[in-house]
Length: 303
Image (cartoon, rainbow, N blue to C red):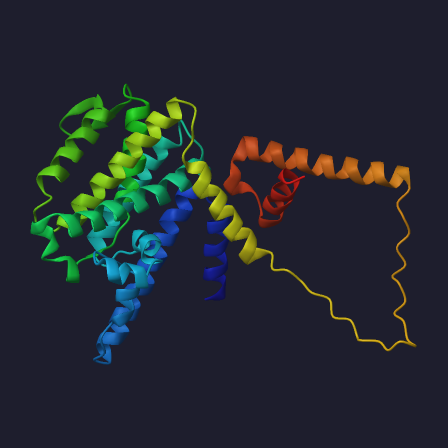
């Protein structure tokens, strides 16, 4: 059993950011389904679900603000996650033809946030939806997937794809068709899901427009992710010294100053390491860097 988990971890570490998102969504789905089965066998309810779904109630969201991030990795039904992951894989592969994995990761998060914001606004503004605001919740990666799909569709409006029965069509036509279907269905039983789709799609269009104008709106969210990863992977260490009396003194550590030659050798070694990391970043993308390499790059950027 240990070998299986080791292999999964190895594949996860070696995979692209697209593969990592599929792994994460699938892993979370399996864990949730197993927990639900166990709870049902013991005739227990599943209250933990309320703490990872995004509520449409303002008051609940204020008490559970993390749900605007967790919801975009949560699926309950097999078909739900199957189609979301297939769409994420297909459009993610197209997206990576023109952008890098770091941008895909940032856009996935931004798309989910945009879908969540439009979801909660709609359920607290429109009277038809407001009556369901107290017991409506949002789950799924659909808004994130829509952001990726619409970003590449509006960035490369001439991109062609092959569709069963329809043949070759422009990707943007498929995107517009999906958008219209979601717009028509915003008063259906799954109104919240369709509204979130629209929010993700609008964010994707905004991304493409801003990127053409030289601005990458994923930079901010990626910086936040970097700081979070660095925080949890590089905890500060502390040294504890024994308190001494006035008659006692702690011997100073024997650190002599560097000579000029030692300083130059150290700086040359640091520069060589950074050059190697930058070369790896250029050819394989940010997700290929190890945690230590990311920290060295982050530290070097602050100097």
